[in-house]
Image 1 (spheres, rainbow, N blue to C red):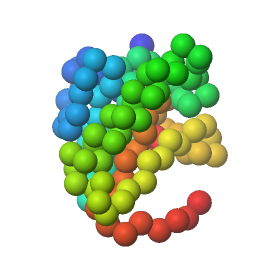
Image 2 (cartoon, protein in one colour):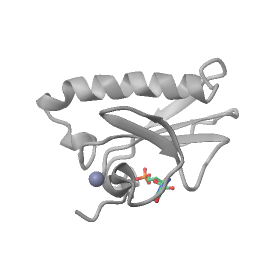
Image 3 (tube, rainbow, N blue to C red):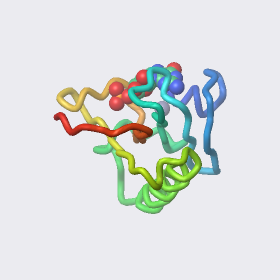
Image 4 (spheres, rainbow, N blue to C red):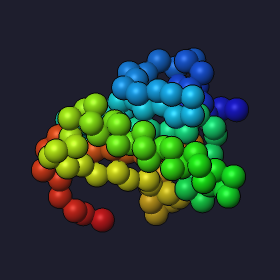
Length: 112
Ligand code: 5GP
Ligand code: ZN
């Protein structure tokens, strides 16, 4: 499958990983929008939030715990941060492998 993030999981495309376990991997976004900008993905290829199934409930809970770890590892747990999952065309999703942006390290603003 021609998926950039599956290639990051396999190591075919290099990335700067900040966290990894059996089910998920977290790595620095190539075009950071803030001092901290980490993408966390399931190793399983799921195209978007809409592709999450009943069988993935445990995986998604696990991924949220990984997001907590990433927040602590990058030191934004005290100051605060934002987690975003862009979905579909209006959501401006550009990579069709489920991913959660964790953004922080500066005061964020809220623009839709
Ligand atoms: P989306 O636009 O789908 O919400 O987010 C995709 C994100 O993946 C973008 O922020 C983009 O900078 C990032 N990205 C795209 N290709 C690569 C890559 O090859 N390596 C890394 N580390 N990030 C990438
Ligand atoms: Zn994929």
